[in-house]
Structures are given as structure tokens and as C-alpha cells.
Length: 69
Image (cartoon, rainbow, N blue to C red; front, side):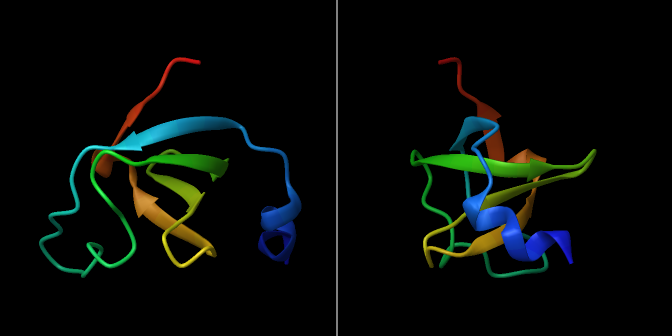
């Protein structure tokens, strides 16, 4: 149950949301295009971020672009 500690985990990097147009799911409530989100965990296909609900959510990488710090 490692995911229960992701809120307290150090931020890996920051990513910028480029769109919230999903074909199957409603993500526009949880993502705001143009907003920068902290990444807490990453897999090959998903970013796990703190979304607009202030909780950890997993989203496909095609919604984001990586931000250089």
C-alpha cells in the first residue's frame, strides 16, 4: 500500500497540463489546462499528481508536457 504515502513523498518533478479533453473519462474537473502540477510518482504510461481535488490522482501522460525547472 505504498500509494497511501505518496502525499508525503518528495516531488519528483513538475508538469504542465496541456489539455483536459478525454475520450472516455471526465478529467476536466480534476485538471486545469495551463496549470503546473507536482508529480509524486510516475510509471511508463501515467503520472500520479496532486490534482485539483488536492488528492493524488493518476492521469495518462498525454495530458501533460514536462516543465524544465
